[in-house]
Image: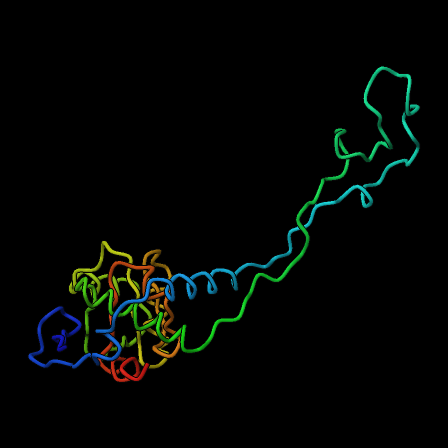
Length: 206
């Protein structure tokens, strides 16, 4: 499929780029997308949660009252989970949440996500640009020109551009990524996917 290329002022340049059908027009696989997003989010977790269990709580181990004859339930020491201040039963322990996912599954998930965006007409291609200096106001004007100022947006560049990154860093609904770092979660976690013209060639090789 072909997509028009716009300039930084939001005007059609008259040029078009071809989006590879093997990347942007595949049969979406929802389960592959689910697994890839789940793995990405799982890898963000620190897994440092911890609560003290019965054996770890500081307190006397003296038996509070005799086993029988008191008229109430039997009870052990003051660290018992049923008492206030006691340990927690089966509390969280530090663990690693990451898991393995095959490369081909991740590749299918990326293609499925890109296909979904293409079907929703949520992909905008702009010619390569840069700013002379970091200026948030210039990026805001750029977003207004291509009509994504009110949308959560991911801008994909072919390579790192410090001035563009710094210009968008303070905007809460904008994320700047390079084509090599583009993943399923970033593709889907927005309402507008803006691709620089040179990044399309990289993405077409996914």
